[in-house]
Length: 192
Image (tube, rainbow, N blue to C red; front, top):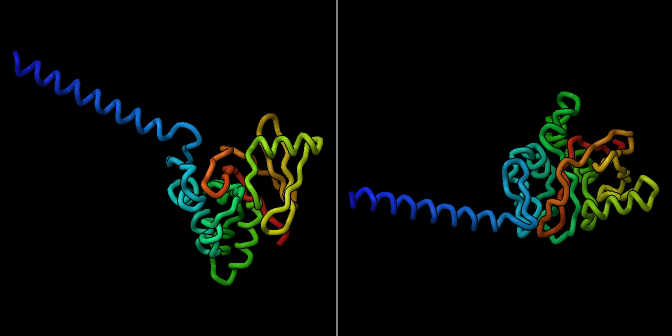
């Protein structure tokens, strides 16, 4: 009987230690840390260091590498990145992504990717405030140099590219050490 009670106490001790360990991990995740693509996005890490862990952004990460923009997006910034998911890239016409990833199309790929980036850190509330000040629309200059329009549909921020394509922010305010990411459901395109 004593051995059984010892096993019970040992099992209880393991459960208590496991629970406290999980609580510690959750505490680290609280605050500004968000989950994106099954991975924690730590505010202490830069944009690229976090994005490489998101299973929903493998196409974007491959594109950033092919465009030679890794060092830039690991730089001081701050940057606001509208990060298209893999599904967003799948909405493009067949063959577009593979074509953009070819070395001879690097300038075009850079133009597309930098159209998803703003210089400076714009939280969702900053963008919404600008939209309200602009009577329903706010125009931002992207790192690409082209303009992008932000607007609201209900409580969701949407982006409208120069061709009229609409992208919706699905996860906002994913803070990074060098800026912020807003996950979007559609790739926006500059005039090409």
